[in-house]
Length: 360
Image 1 (cartoon, helix red, strand yellow):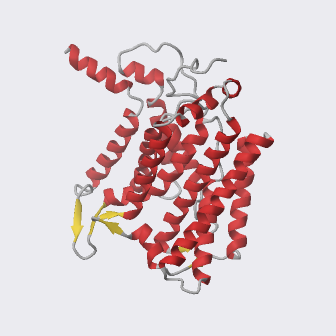
Image 2 (tube, rainbow, N blue to C red; image 1 turned 90 degrees about the vertical axis):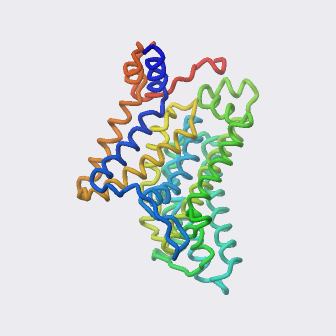
Image 3 (cartoon, rainbow, N blue to C red; image 1 turned 180 degrees about the vertical axis):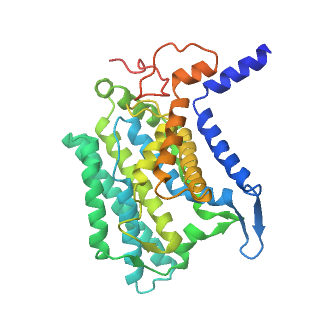
Protein backbone atom coordinates (compact mmCIF):
# COMPACT_ATOMS: atom_id res chain seq x y z
CA UNK A 1 0.00 0.00 0.00
CA UNK A 2 2.82 2.37 0.86
CA UNK A 3 4.56 1.63 -2.43
CA UNK A 4 1.36 2.19 -4.38
CA UNK A 5 0.78 5.48 -2.55
CA UNK A 6 4.33 6.57 -3.33
CA UNK A 7 3.90 5.78 -7.01
CA UNK A 8 0.62 7.71 -7.17
CA UNK A 9 2.22 10.61 -5.34
CA UNK A 10 5.05 10.83 -7.87
CA UNK A 11 2.59 10.43 -10.73
CA UNK A 12 0.40 13.31 -9.60
CA UNK A 13 3.43 15.51 -9.04
CA UNK A 14 4.44 15.07 -12.71
CA UNK A 15 3.52 18.41 -14.24
CA UNK A 16 2.29 16.93 -17.53
CA UNK A 17 0.00 14.30 -16.02
CA UNK A 18 -3.18 16.30 -16.45
CA UNK A 19 -2.40 17.31 -20.02
CA UNK A 20 -1.91 13.65 -20.91
CA UNK A 21 -5.04 12.75 -18.93
CA UNK A 22 -7.01 15.39 -20.85
CA UNK A 23 -5.91 13.89 -24.18
CA UNK A 24 -6.94 10.43 -22.99
CA UNK A 25 -10.24 11.82 -21.66
CA UNK A 26 -11.10 13.51 -24.96
CA UNK A 27 -10.31 10.32 -26.86
CA UNK A 28 -12.51 8.34 -24.46
CA UNK A 29 -15.40 10.75 -25.09
CA UNK A 30 -15.00 10.18 -28.81
CA UNK A 31 -14.83 6.43 -28.30
CA UNK A 32 -18.11 6.52 -26.38
CA UNK A 33 -19.76 8.15 -29.38
CA UNK A 34 -17.98 5.89 -31.88
CA UNK A 35 -16.37 2.68 -30.54
CA UNK A 36 -14.20 2.49 -33.64
CA UNK A 37 -12.80 5.99 -33.25
CA UNK A 38 -9.28 4.81 -32.37
CA UNK A 39 -9.03 2.22 -35.11
CA UNK A 40 -6.22 2.62 -37.63
CA UNK A 41 -6.30 0.79 -40.94
CA UNK A 42 -3.84 0.43 -43.78
CA UNK A 43 -5.00 1.48 -47.22
CA UNK A 44 -3.33 -0.53 -49.95
CA UNK A 45 -4.50 1.98 -52.55
CA UNK A 46 -2.66 4.92 -51.01
CA UNK A 47 -0.03 2.94 -49.11
CA UNK A 48 -0.84 4.80 -45.92
CA UNK A 49 -2.30 4.31 -42.48
CA UNK A 50 -5.63 6.08 -42.07
CA UNK A 51 -7.67 6.86 -38.99
CA UNK A 52 -8.65 9.59 -36.59
CA UNK A 53 -5.40 9.35 -34.64
CA UNK A 54 -3.47 9.93 -37.86
CA UNK A 55 -5.66 12.95 -38.61
CA UNK A 56 -4.98 14.37 -35.13
CA UNK A 57 -1.24 13.93 -35.59
CA UNK A 58 -1.41 15.62 -38.98
CA UNK A 59 -3.38 18.56 -37.55
CA UNK A 60 -0.91 18.88 -34.65
CA UNK A 61 2.16 19.11 -36.91
CA UNK A 62 1.99 22.87 -37.78
CA UNK A 63 1.10 23.77 -34.19
CA UNK A 64 3.96 21.61 -32.94
CA UNK A 65 6.41 23.67 -34.99
CA UNK A 66 5.05 27.00 -33.75
CA UNK A 67 4.80 25.87 -30.12
CA UNK A 68 8.46 24.83 -30.15
CA UNK A 69 9.62 28.29 -31.23
CA UNK A 70 7.12 29.99 -28.93
CA UNK A 71 8.39 27.95 -25.98
CA UNK A 72 11.92 29.28 -26.42
CA UNK A 73 10.69 32.85 -26.83
CA UNK A 74 8.55 32.68 -23.69
CA UNK A 75 11.45 31.14 -21.77
CA UNK A 76 13.36 34.41 -22.30
CA UNK A 77 10.47 36.33 -20.77
CA UNK A 78 9.13 37.48 -24.15
CA UNK A 79 6.29 36.56 -26.46
CA UNK A 80 5.80 36.29 -30.22
CA UNK A 81 2.41 37.32 -31.55
CA UNK A 82 3.57 37.37 -35.17
CA UNK A 83 3.88 33.61 -35.80
CA UNK A 84 0.45 33.34 -37.44
CA UNK A 85 1.36 36.12 -39.85
CA UNK A 86 4.69 34.40 -40.56
CA UNK A 87 2.69 31.38 -41.71
CA UNK A 88 0.77 33.60 -44.12
CA UNK A 89 3.97 35.23 -45.38
CA UNK A 90 5.59 31.84 -45.93
CA UNK A 91 2.61 30.49 -47.82
CA UNK A 92 2.25 33.67 -49.87
CA UNK A 93 5.89 33.66 -51.00
CA UNK A 94 5.87 29.96 -51.86
CA UNK A 95 2.55 29.99 -53.74
CA UNK A 96 3.32 33.21 -55.61
CA UNK A 97 6.73 31.91 -56.66
CA UNK A 98 5.37 28.56 -57.84
CA UNK A 99 2.48 30.13 -59.71
CA UNK A 100 4.85 32.33 -61.72
CA UNK A 101 7.79 29.90 -62.16
CA UNK A 102 8.80 28.73 -65.63
CA UNK A 103 8.66 25.09 -64.50
CA UNK A 104 6.17 25.27 -61.60
CA UNK A 105 5.93 21.50 -61.15
CA UNK A 106 9.66 20.83 -60.85
CA UNK A 107 11.52 19.88 -57.70
CA UNK A 108 13.81 22.88 -58.20
CA UNK A 109 10.85 25.26 -58.15
CA UNK A 110 9.53 23.64 -54.97
CA UNK A 111 12.92 23.91 -53.25
CA UNK A 112 13.39 27.51 -54.35
CA UNK A 113 9.89 28.51 -53.25
CA UNK A 114 10.32 26.94 -49.82
CA UNK A 115 13.81 28.41 -49.46
CA UNK A 116 12.64 31.94 -50.27
CA UNK A 117 9.66 31.61 -47.92
CA UNK A 118 11.75 30.43 -44.97
CA UNK A 119 14.48 32.99 -45.64
CA UNK A 120 12.00 35.88 -45.58
CA UNK A 121 10.43 34.57 -42.35
CA UNK A 122 13.87 34.32 -40.76
CA UNK A 123 14.64 37.91 -41.77
CA UNK A 124 11.38 39.15 -40.29
CA UNK A 125 12.06 37.17 -37.12
CA UNK A 126 15.54 38.68 -36.83
CA UNK A 127 13.96 42.14 -37.14
CA UNK A 128 11.77 41.25 -34.17
CA UNK A 129 14.86 40.19 -32.24
CA UNK A 130 16.84 43.32 -33.14
CA UNK A 131 14.02 45.66 -32.15
CA UNK A 132 13.64 43.86 -28.82
CA UNK A 133 17.28 43.15 -27.96
CA UNK A 134 19.06 46.16 -29.44
CA UNK A 135 16.49 48.94 -29.64
CA UNK A 136 14.86 47.85 -26.38
CA UNK A 137 11.21 47.69 -27.45
CA UNK A 138 8.71 45.56 -25.56
CA UNK A 139 8.23 42.06 -27.06
CA UNK A 140 4.44 42.35 -26.91
CA UNK A 141 4.32 45.62 -28.85
CA UNK A 142 7.07 44.63 -31.29
CA UNK A 143 5.54 41.31 -32.29
CA UNK A 144 2.04 42.80 -32.34
CA UNK A 145 3.22 45.35 -34.91
CA UNK A 146 4.97 42.58 -36.86
CA UNK A 147 1.76 40.54 -36.77
CA UNK A 148 -0.05 43.36 -38.56
CA UNK A 149 2.87 44.12 -40.86
CA UNK A 150 3.38 40.46 -41.77
CA UNK A 151 -0.26 39.95 -42.69
CA UNK A 152 -0.11 43.13 -44.75
CA UNK A 153 3.08 41.96 -46.47
CA UNK A 154 1.40 38.68 -47.40
CA UNK A 155 -1.44 40.64 -49.00
CA UNK A 156 1.03 42.79 -50.93
CA UNK A 157 2.85 39.70 -52.22
CA UNK A 158 -0.35 38.07 -53.47
CA UNK A 159 -2.15 41.26 -54.47
CA UNK A 160 -4.71 40.59 -51.75
CA UNK A 161 -5.97 37.48 -53.55
CA UNK A 162 -5.90 33.82 -52.63
CA UNK A 163 -3.08 32.28 -54.64
CA UNK A 164 -2.91 28.66 -55.79
CA UNK A 165 -0.19 26.65 -57.48
CA UNK A 166 0.47 23.15 -58.77
CA UNK A 167 3.59 21.34 -57.63
CA UNK A 168 3.44 17.69 -56.65
CA UNK A 169 6.78 17.83 -54.81
CA UNK A 170 5.59 20.71 -52.63
CA UNK A 171 2.23 19.04 -52.09
CA UNK A 172 3.96 15.80 -51.08
CA UNK A 173 5.44 17.52 -48.03
CA UNK A 174 1.97 18.02 -46.56
CA UNK A 175 0.08 15.10 -48.11
CA UNK A 176 2.68 12.42 -48.84
CA UNK A 177 3.53 9.29 -46.87
CA UNK A 178 6.69 7.44 -45.90
CA UNK A 179 6.29 3.88 -44.63
CA UNK A 180 2.58 4.58 -44.35
CA UNK A 181 3.04 7.61 -42.08
CA UNK A 182 2.35 11.25 -43.07
CA UNK A 183 5.47 13.12 -44.16
CA UNK A 184 4.25 16.25 -42.39
CA UNK A 185 4.15 14.42 -39.05
CA UNK A 186 7.55 12.78 -39.53
CA UNK A 187 9.08 16.09 -40.61
CA UNK A 188 7.63 17.98 -37.65
CA UNK A 189 8.78 15.38 -35.13
CA UNK A 190 12.27 15.22 -36.66
CA UNK A 191 12.70 19.01 -36.60
CA UNK A 192 11.43 19.34 -33.03
CA UNK A 193 13.69 16.52 -31.82
CA UNK A 194 16.65 18.18 -33.57
CA UNK A 195 15.88 21.53 -31.91
CA UNK A 196 15.48 19.82 -28.53
CA UNK A 197 18.81 18.02 -28.88
CA UNK A 198 20.62 21.23 -29.78
CA UNK A 199 18.98 23.14 -26.95
CA UNK A 200 19.35 20.52 -24.23
CA UNK A 201 22.64 18.92 -25.24
CA UNK A 202 24.44 22.25 -25.21
CA UNK A 203 24.59 25.21 -22.85
CA UNK A 204 22.10 27.07 -25.04
CA UNK A 205 19.10 25.88 -23.04
CA UNK A 206 20.58 27.03 -19.73
CA UNK A 207 21.50 30.39 -21.21
CA UNK A 208 17.95 30.91 -22.48
CA UNK A 209 16.56 29.99 -19.07
CA UNK A 210 18.99 32.33 -17.30
CA UNK A 211 17.85 35.27 -19.43
CA UNK A 212 14.26 34.59 -18.46
CA UNK A 213 15.13 34.23 -14.77
CA UNK A 214 17.34 37.30 -14.45
CA UNK A 215 18.42 39.17 -17.56
CA UNK A 216 20.72 41.59 -15.73
CA UNK A 217 22.52 38.85 -13.83
CA UNK A 218 22.97 36.95 -17.10
CA UNK A 219 24.56 40.01 -18.65
CA UNK A 220 26.90 40.44 -15.72
CA UNK A 221 27.80 36.75 -15.99
CA UNK A 222 29.02 37.38 -19.55
CA UNK A 223 26.11 36.01 -21.58
CA UNK A 224 25.42 37.70 -24.90
CA UNK A 225 21.77 38.48 -24.23
CA UNK A 226 21.26 40.35 -27.51
CA UNK A 227 22.53 37.48 -29.65
CA UNK A 228 20.42 34.97 -27.76
CA UNK A 229 17.24 37.02 -28.12
CA UNK A 230 17.82 37.57 -31.83
CA UNK A 231 18.43 33.83 -32.22
CA UNK A 232 15.22 32.71 -30.49
CA UNK A 233 13.00 35.19 -32.34
CA UNK A 234 14.61 34.24 -35.66
CA UNK A 235 14.10 30.55 -34.89
CA UNK A 236 10.49 31.18 -33.87
CA UNK A 237 9.72 32.89 -37.19
CA UNK A 238 11.62 30.22 -39.13
CA UNK A 239 9.62 27.40 -37.52
CA UNK A 240 6.42 29.35 -38.15
CA UNK A 241 7.47 29.55 -41.80
CA UNK A 242 7.78 25.77 -41.90
CA UNK A 243 4.30 25.52 -40.38
CA UNK A 244 3.09 27.80 -43.17
CA UNK A 245 4.58 25.45 -45.76
CA UNK A 246 2.74 22.55 -44.11
CA UNK A 247 -0.58 24.41 -44.02
CA UNK A 248 -0.53 25.74 -47.58
CA UNK A 249 0.81 22.49 -48.97
CA UNK A 250 -2.31 20.66 -47.84
CA UNK A 251 -4.54 22.50 -50.29
CA UNK A 252 -1.84 24.22 -52.42
CA UNK A 253 -3.52 27.55 -51.75
CA UNK A 254 -2.73 30.45 -49.45
CA UNK A 255 -5.55 32.48 -47.95
CA UNK A 256 -3.76 35.59 -46.67
CA UNK A 257 -6.61 36.34 -44.27
CA UNK A 258 -7.05 32.85 -42.80
CA UNK A 259 -3.72 31.05 -43.12
CA UNK A 260 -2.21 30.99 -39.63
CA UNK A 261 -5.20 32.85 -38.16
CA UNK A 262 -5.10 32.68 -34.33
CA UNK A 263 -2.31 30.08 -34.40
CA UNK A 264 -0.32 32.35 -32.09
CA UNK A 265 -3.00 31.97 -29.41
CA UNK A 266 -3.05 28.19 -29.70
CA UNK A 267 0.75 28.13 -29.56
CA UNK A 268 0.81 30.20 -26.38
CA UNK A 269 -1.81 27.92 -24.83
CA UNK A 270 0.18 24.84 -25.81
CA UNK A 271 3.33 26.25 -24.19
CA UNK A 272 1.57 27.28 -20.97
CA UNK A 273 -0.29 23.98 -20.73
CA UNK A 274 3.07 22.29 -21.18
CA UNK A 275 4.40 23.91 -18.01
CA UNK A 276 6.41 26.90 -19.21
CA UNK A 277 5.80 30.03 -17.16
CA UNK A 278 4.89 33.23 -18.97
CA UNK A 279 7.28 34.95 -16.57
CA UNK A 280 10.19 33.22 -18.31
CA UNK A 281 12.85 30.87 -17.03
CA UNK A 282 12.53 27.12 -16.95
CA UNK A 283 10.84 25.68 -20.05
CA UNK A 284 9.70 22.31 -21.34
CA UNK A 285 9.78 21.48 -25.05
CA UNK A 286 8.20 18.09 -24.31
CA UNK A 287 5.41 19.87 -22.46
CA UNK A 288 4.86 22.22 -25.39
CA UNK A 289 4.60 19.21 -27.70
CA UNK A 290 2.04 17.58 -25.40
CA UNK A 291 0.11 20.85 -25.31
CA UNK A 292 0.09 21.03 -29.10
CA UNK A 293 -1.28 17.48 -29.36
CA UNK A 294 -3.91 18.31 -26.73
CA UNK A 295 -5.16 21.36 -28.61
CA UNK A 296 -5.25 19.43 -31.90
CA UNK A 297 -7.21 16.65 -30.15
CA UNK A 298 -9.58 19.20 -28.65
CA UNK A 299 -10.21 20.83 -32.03
CA UNK A 300 -10.92 17.46 -33.64
CA UNK A 301 -13.20 16.47 -30.76
CA UNK A 302 -15.23 19.66 -31.12
CA UNK A 303 -15.83 18.87 -34.78
CA UNK A 304 -16.49 15.17 -34.15
CA UNK A 305 -19.08 15.87 -31.43
CA UNK A 306 -20.86 18.31 -33.71
CA UNK A 307 -20.66 21.21 -31.26
CA UNK A 308 -22.15 24.34 -32.86
CA UNK A 309 -19.62 26.83 -34.13
CA UNK A 310 -21.09 29.52 -31.87
CA UNK A 311 -20.43 27.39 -28.77
CA UNK A 312 -17.01 26.10 -29.82
CA UNK A 313 -14.91 28.87 -28.22
CA UNK A 314 -16.74 28.51 -24.89
CA UNK A 315 -16.33 24.72 -24.88
CA UNK A 316 -12.64 24.99 -25.73
CA UNK A 317 -12.07 27.67 -23.09
CA UNK A 318 -13.81 25.59 -20.41
CA UNK A 319 -11.65 22.56 -21.08
CA UNK A 320 -8.44 24.61 -21.05
CA UNK A 321 -9.37 26.43 -17.82
CA UNK A 322 -10.11 23.14 -16.04
CA UNK A 323 -6.84 21.70 -17.27
CA UNK A 324 -4.90 24.83 -16.28
CA UNK A 325 -6.27 24.67 -12.74
CA UNK A 326 -5.56 20.94 -12.53
CA UNK A 327 -1.92 21.59 -13.43
CA UNK A 328 -1.39 24.14 -10.66
CA UNK A 329 1.15 23.30 -7.99
CA UNK A 330 -1.46 23.54 -5.23
CA UNK A 331 -3.87 21.13 -6.94
CA UNK A 332 -1.17 18.62 -7.84
CA UNK A 333 0.17 18.75 -4.30
CA UNK A 334 -3.31 18.11 -2.95
CA UNK A 335 -3.84 15.16 -5.30
CA UNK A 336 -0.47 13.74 -4.27
CA UNK A 337 -1.38 14.04 -0.60
CA UNK A 338 1.22 16.76 -0.09
CA UNK A 339 0.99 20.22 1.32
CA UNK A 340 2.37 22.80 -1.12
CA UNK A 341 5.34 24.66 0.20
CA UNK A 342 4.06 28.00 -1.06
CA UNK A 343 0.95 29.46 -2.71
CA UNK A 344 0.94 29.38 -6.49
CA UNK A 345 0.28 32.50 -8.47
CA UNK A 346 -2.05 32.53 -11.44
CA UNK A 347 0.81 33.60 -13.73
CA UNK A 348 2.97 30.63 -12.77
CA UNK A 349 0.83 27.51 -12.28
CA UNK A 350 3.39 24.82 -12.83
CA UNK A 351 6.84 26.38 -12.68
CA UNK A 352 8.83 24.60 -9.99
CA UNK A 353 12.27 25.89 -10.89
CA UNK A 354 14.22 27.68 -8.18
CA UNK A 355 14.82 31.35 -8.86
CA UNK A 356 18.32 31.11 -7.39
CA UNK A 357 19.81 29.50 -10.48
CA UNK A 358 21.42 32.81 -11.48
CA UNK A 359 22.70 35.15 -8.78
CA UNK A 360 20.89 38.46 -8.61
